[in-house]
Amino acid sequence: MGSGVLPHLDRRLPLFERWLAQRIATTADTEHARMLQYFATWHQLRKLRAKAVRSPLGTSTTQESRQQITQAGAFLVWLAARHVTLDACTQTDLDAWHAEKYATRRPAQAFLRWCMDTRRMPRLTIPNHPTTNPHPMGQHQRITAPQRVLADDSTSPRARLAACPVLLFAQPVSRSPAWSPTTLSTTASISHSGSATRPPQSPSRWPPSCSTTSRPWPPTPLPSNRIRPGSFLAAARASR
Image (cartoon, rainbow, N blue to C red; front, side, top):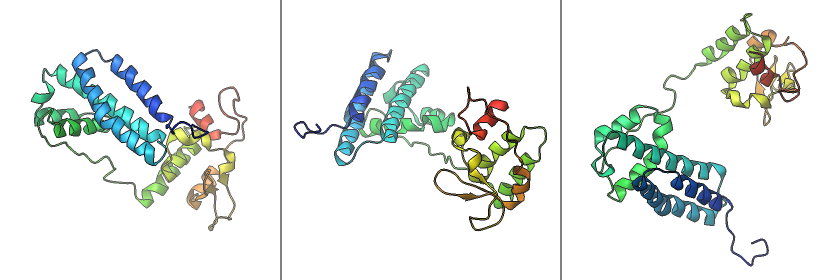
């Protein structure tokens, strides 16, 4: 392919096809396996191949397809446990499926729409539940929350400081290993006085009201056998 003799093939396509074959092979119910194979062939793979012609496939694209296949299989198993076939599925069944674990089960909606479009199940209304926070934290709460955390002497200083990116900048805890002592600055080089944090891409201002509390974090050496050197936020998780 590199020399142009063979047509270009996105490497994520055969990886997805290999995963799909394994997923279908491990499906116990033959009717479920046949339905998933139809859905993957005529819907998922067709979309992935068309998109691969235009641009390289990303990890999120193939991961989304995997989640749709996985949740489609989960829906078929769930429906069978209710002693209901796909062509006899009712609005009550669909509402009950979405009533629990909505965010996890939502990828199955691609399969449901395909089944309706191909007349494999009745035309029903797919519930749409908003997953965004209807009452986001206000600016005052965003500042006072880390103040309370930083002033809590019952928690280790590293754990208190590790909570601040989550509260102030909506950074998930999974990203905490990327933060190191160098991300905390007490200079006024950004635009305002006080401390500031510098994530990998761009600086984010640390509120001055939190600066005095967060500044004296202990310079204790980190356990190098468990945590990447210099990552005090990751150490906070280990010390809890």
